Image (tube, rainbow, N blue to C red; front, side, top):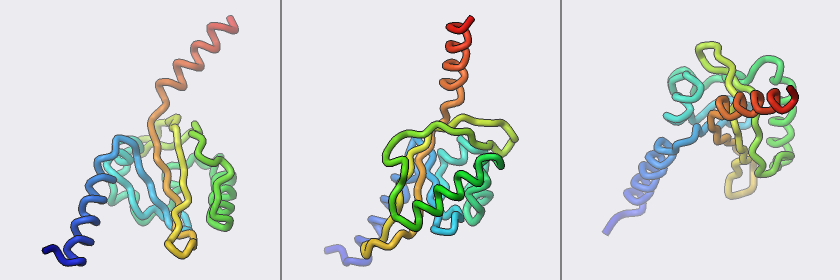
Length: 144
């Protein structure tokens, strides 16, 4: 028979494997906006290793001109426990470590402890740069 602690450790290891194996970037930040989890897909998408990202501000991947709006939305989500965006996919600009500008499709969720207290925010992200550029080119062709 497996003890509770063995089951808990096995569940934690399984969860870590599942999060690490996601095809989409997973970024989890605490309520102050410090990155606490950065999976392998986030490394591939944004170019920063886990060691580069974990413990750093979310500003790592947010273009400077978008930071005030992001910070206001983040603070509102932490304060209210809800997201103005709901479950919609949002396409926005993001930064890559090498300086490239990315278009990224994000979904967000507020993370809550069992007592309802907000403990963080998570984002799932997928590169949408090629799709965005194709759409822009198509729109320009239609206008020509």
